[in-house]
Length: 149
Image (cartoon, rainbow, N blue to C red; front, top):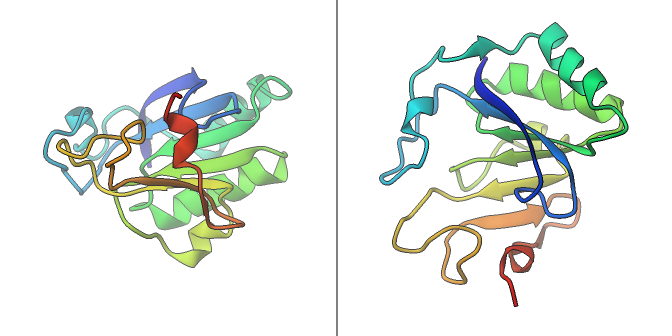
């Protein structure tokens, strides 16, 4: 599994400081995708267990969540990274264009954003969106956290 970019982000997982890995090789190719450079498999750097652990260690006590922008197509590797993060006390989140992911991934996620990008419906900050951001344990939609009042 390769990651194209790593950032510390503040908005994608409300209430959390998240270590965000943008995973390359996305097979979905949504029309209007804001990150088509992530479609090509192998772009960026390999996210080995050691590289991942270095990021987790560097931000220990500073960040609270690990966010994967994609990567569900690398099921075994993603699962291993989710377990590694949870073992260290991090919350976990996956942003996917799929409507559902295997339960084996869900059981290691705190939050998940599902739904293919649809330019006409907009993202999580639009009330008409087809995308759903939810807390996995309770299956509760948290879309309201993205809609300013």
